[in-house]
Image (tube, rainbow, N blue to C red; front, side, top):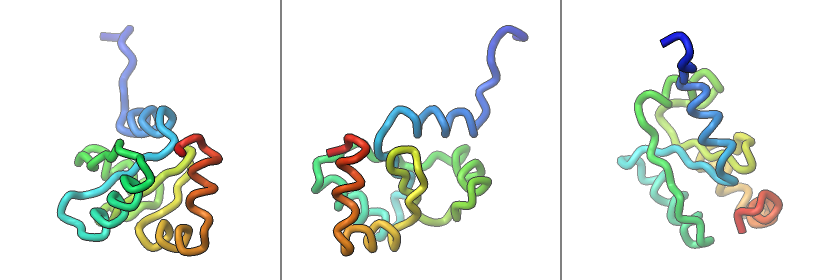
Length: 103
């Protein structure tokens, strides 16, 4: 109906991102996705989001490859597995998670 707002995939994505301090979009079949999800679960974060098909196109519009894991922290795109691992190795990941209230 005309009075009902149209919820586009971009609006859905923005709503999901704004509600959580950490959002992970992944595919179940990716071994690196499993590794990164395990890392975040080891930190005590247990809300992991598997990427539905409708969100893939929206992520591509944001410059994310639809074939890899996508991590957002505090509403900001961090990147994929390489970026998360680099932050962790450089001891920047935990302070970032604390800053956004995830830890």
